[in-house]
Length: 370
Image (cartoon, rainbow, N blue to C red; front, top):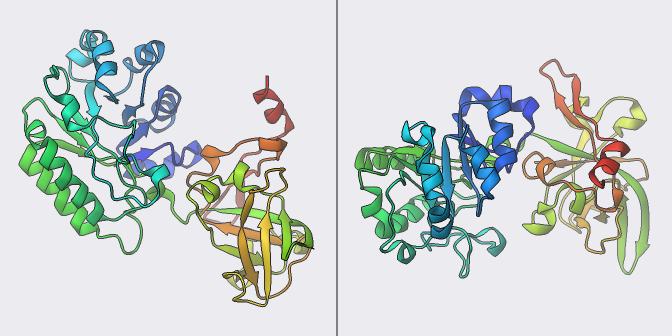
């Protein structure tokens, strides 16, 4: 099991994850450096394309480097095969393939849609010299269960089974998108599939979950800045932004669960995360509860709206809201759009105290702009 840094890369939490992770998968040089420096263990790297200088550095410390296209492999083949770490077997080289079998529901996150640039279809491998390749990699899932993985592997096996059975292939990476930690995930089916692959094809099997490592482990705290009526909606403007702080709300699209904090943590002098459970009131779909609001951001983007939610009691300026499940694909994707400030990153300790591990200020915004 590898931690997908593209989903979560807060290094202050790596000590907690390290006992369960064999290492990390990285989407390029910077994530790979982060993995080697802070997590250790296995560093698997895949990118749709590598720059020559990036690859030269990756050859010095990565353990798997997977290529996305035949031209990239052919361009760098001699350089890779002549490297001492490749010759010793310390570094293995692979290809990302495309099984052309789609199970996804959102085209933006589906690598198997027509015209996809991610992975090599079977017909592109015909007649290609694959000597030096020792691994195959596919990544087609997004927030899906074991059955979708099984179905995808069967499709992969139909097109690439003979290659997988070749003695030169030493590992199979089945990518990420596995909701392994969800209560209804069929973990035994996953175990059975991995055992079958290892026994049948004599390869090491890697999985790269990202979201599954940290699902429902963090919240984003927001404050109500303004409330007004306009064009048939009651708007609540918050000090957080979907575009800047939780872009999956717009891209997926994804609807987070929201809780009103009663009384507001700022008002009672107690941090929201330290309040008892009865202090949180879950919001609902619009119209289900007496008071409905459109939760929006303090940016100029017209569509920077988190969603329509209803509450038991009216919201007021200064109230606190908590957005649940805000660990994965949030901190790693934040932007400084409109100069919106970023929230601090805090860890809730076992003794109930909060420890700030990152507090971004104006200087960080200015520095990024050169």
